[in-house]
Amino acid sequence: MSRRYWLMKCEPGAYAIDDLARDGHTSWEGVRNYQARNFMREMQEGDGVLFYASNATPSGVTGLASVSRGAYPDEFAWKKGHKYYDPASTREAPVWYMVDIAFVERFPDIVSLDTLKSTKGLEQMMVTKKGSRLSVQPATKAEYDIVVRLGRKKH
DNA sequence: GCCAACGTTGGC
DNA sequence: GCCAACGTTGGC
Image: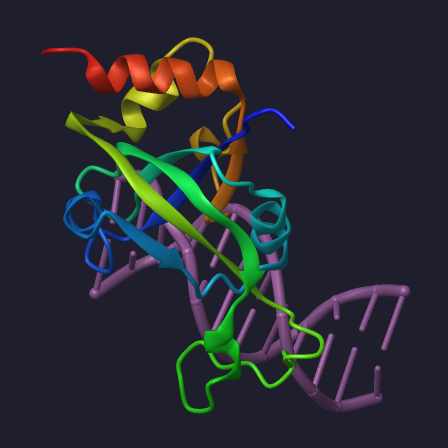
């Protein structure tokens, strides 16, 4: 299967591109939305990730990552008392999944949501549409390439 | 901090 | 299976 592309949201207070640059890689647990989970289950090692900072000033894509491990059961769903605990998920029949991502690059400047919205070719991206709260979204190669070009552009 | 949008839950 | 109530996301 050829490489696919995704956009993953995170609040920078929880985990930012600088944290990923420092750590090199991280696990992406805690997704508790079925649509996002279904997208995560399609992720494969080597897929490209637009790392998006949500609830930020401004919000936008702050860098790139890649999937370093495809979907596997979210073990935090089994930890009683943990904020990601979900009794509906068992080891025999996991409900939730996580992936690992690796740092690729940090953009010199954020590609803001405003920029995404006003850039030709990105009109169909979910993140540019009103009310789109999905934290894991698919992107096309064309969209990914456009965002990468914007992110690397010198101002 | 507000609140619109949206997903989930649960009573019926 | 409908839908009101509720909780969460995330832009602003």
